[in-house]
Image (cartoon, rainbow, N blue to C red; front, side, top):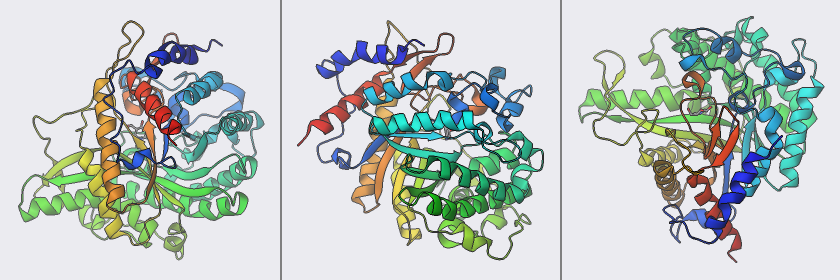
Length: 471
Ligand code: IFM
């Protein structure tokens, strides 16, 4: 397989190392980012990059089913080939290393490593073993997410996350993975963004499996969080030296006016996006305001569940992208009031770095036991084009600089943030938006699979090189 990625980097790196590129990225001298122990890496997820959905015994996932359903994904795109990372992983890891990135956050495809009877699939397991060993050889810190949305379809056929049994199947899967991979993983995250799995998957149907009912969303969330809580002691038993945590996406909601109703609406927005997940994890209870927003949707909770869910964490992964401006909907809830004249990304999401700082400092006040934090995703989509072999993603460079400055402000305000992962290492399958939205710091030409390092990645590499050289 041609190593296009490294070749692209080799072509561009002299300009970077000679300092002949203007540098709108490098953080100011007093930024916490200059600390060598502040981990700077990049993230991906299995279904978004791997492809090879029918290979080596991989079973179908809910995303194979969903994306094959007409009308569910833009342009009918699917993850069948994606970035072909299953075959190109070595070149992709070389590319990651050549950029000087110190951490890599990846996820494991549950349907690739376990059959329907719960037995290991050796070929699938070997793929991740090879990959993790290579990261170790290269000195790259690995953050492994066990569940980034690709639920085996056979479990969905039995109710998916609406079925409590799925939480126990997740604990079995966690047991297998942590016995097989112990010693090769630096940090385990049980789930990626349970809000998306529960709300987009079962509450409004925008994601797989495509169900739409608020009551389903709260019950699916409970089972997801239970799965997480059951998995944490399993990880502790099988792989004691690693860090254990979970990754949550968080949303900033601001009020459209000073009126009490709009202020309350903004509060409810953040309850629905943040407290719904963080309160059970960090306080062992659901926020009662959630059920003001969605009356009558209390999930079935069995004795001991909340204690299980609130198992102590070594770290909390935070994914942040944008804010939402809201007003009261005149009843129990909120409605979006998009602001005019603000900067937006290709997703239409507002660029609002202060939201990240404000949420982090707010969590520190709300949760007395807030664990150390890693920003496990942050980044933006833009309609990037390769011109004369280069991708000038100026908006992304500015976006990253401003969000990293917000992280620095949070650290200076006393929040223990230990690292930051760019979303994403490379352009990939952006779920219901298919391949049109490009989040990578590396461009992927899907017709040739050629990787081209974007200017943002060059500048991150330049910074990391300078930081490394510092005494
Ligand atoms: O691509 C996704 C990722 O899988 C989860 N967090 C948000 C990203 C951008 O939408």
